[in-house]
Structures are given as C-alpha cells and as structure tokens.
Length: 334
Image (cartoon, rainbow, N blue to C red; front, side, top):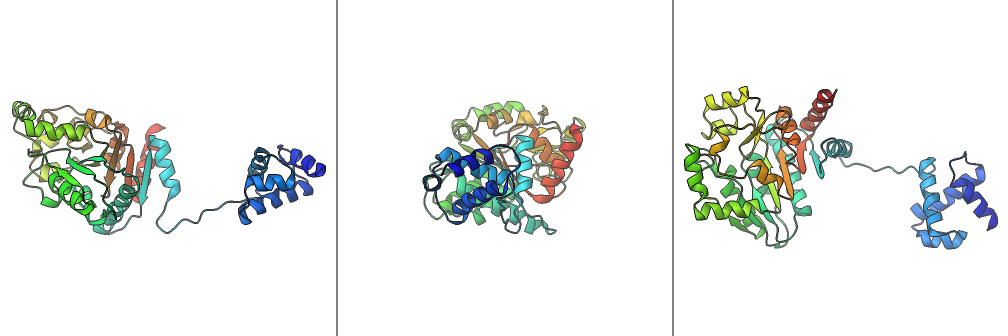
C-alpha cells in the first residue's frame, strides 16, 4: 500500500512517468472507464482518497494513457458548433448538414430546430414567433409527445401578400395545434403607411395586449431576412423596392422581425422601421432566449450582422453558412 501511495504521488506530478506509474494509472483508468467502478470504490481498494483518484484519472488523460473519443453521428459537427458559441458568445449553436437542394437544406435546419425546441422549451413557456419560411416549417416537425401548455404569440404583424404558412398568426396556430398549446394572434399588418398610423395602432387595446405578451415572452423564434431586391419584405409588399435600395445604401445587410441592421450589427434607423408593427431589437434584447433560424444559401452577411447585434442567444443554421460566417468573422477581425 505504501508503495502504491509513493507511485501515486509521483504519477500525480508533471514529471515523466516510470513503468510503475504508468501501470498504476492504467489500472485505475481501466477500473473506472471499463470496469464501471466508482472513484470511491477505487480509492478504498488502493488506499487513496477520492480527490486523489480524480487527480490520477486526470493525469491518465493528460499523458495519453486514456484517450477519450466521441463517435459523431453523420451530419453532426460539434467543433463547428463550439466555434460559433465561443466566437459570438452564444448560449448554444446547432449546425445542420448542408444540401444542394434548398428545400432539403431547409428541412434539415427546421428539423434540427424542432428537436431543439422539444428538448429545451420549458413547460408553460411563452414563445414569441416571427415570420418566414424557416419558422413556418416548424409545425411539420415540432410535435411534442405530451401537453406542456405552451403559448405561441405573434411577434409582428402579417401581410396578405405572404403565404399563410409563413405569416406569424398562422405559424402560432399551427405550433399550438401540434403541441396542444394555445395561440395569441396579432391582428395588425407588419407595416403601415406612416408612423402616425403605427402609433394609433399601438394604442389599440387588442394590438397592445398581444405585443405586450410577446415582449414578456420567455423565448423568441426569429428568422434572419435579407435586403436584396427579392427579399421577403419586398416580395410581401411590406417594403417598396426603392425604400429597400435606400436601406442598402445606408449599409443594411439583413433584418430580424423587420428591424434592419448593418454588417457590424448596428440598427439602421429609417422611416421604414418607424412603420413597424412588432417587437423591436430592444424588445428582443430583454427576452431571455432568442433563437435565430436560417437555412438559405448566401446569407453570410445577413447572419454575421444578426449575430453582432447581440440579440441572438441561439443560432440554428446549416453547415455552409456556419463555415462562411466564421471565416468572414475571422477575416474582418484581422
């Protein structure tokens, strides 16, 4: 026993290991990792304290006697997820496989988002919901096996030019139906003619009530929009093309709930944002967990700008976008 303790003292230091020390570390590691013995049991057998056993196991890993490897299932990229978390100070990041077919890529990202929600959404959560095809695809995959009394509330108004499955009210209803929850609809357009009309609508009891529920939500689900001529805001009629051109001239690269930002994550103030019926970036910053979901190709600048706003806590994205965003972030930092 005294010999074992002497060997253990030497093995726990940073010095080169003798054959006896390697034997001791290998024996203890085998008992722990292969024999499923507890550290307390190993300590009693060798006459060591539990902290001593822990230090020896750590030493076994440091010296390569123990080499722990995790077999990653196909399509899982843990390294890329870790880099996104650390680079952008995210609570979490989920990277789905990329596909050449846009619909297959969207399905992969949306399915990953639905799985994430099922694992992480707390019971009785209030979830603010945005607009778009990625958010709109969630009800097809989000089907919890038990009732959890979650509330889904529209985070912005809708547009008659946007297909029903991608309008916030419709998405909320579909999510509520798929999970035995309830929906809170916002009966207002996403954008109005001028700031005066917006102010009047925001004072309407029904509109103010729904937006307050959304602002007090536990979680927000948002897409990351673009500012090109064919972006959702232009196609939906929410933003005239000439106004989008003006926003791009001010540096706008993307939007979250219609709130435009530049590549550095700075808010672009304009008459356009003053006509928004929905949550602002300031509102989103007060929500505990904001989850951004994006699957479309060539959205590097959009995603990078969105991450730099500081609004997003979780990003669920495809592998190509994740790789390109990290590369561009590294290039811009040098």
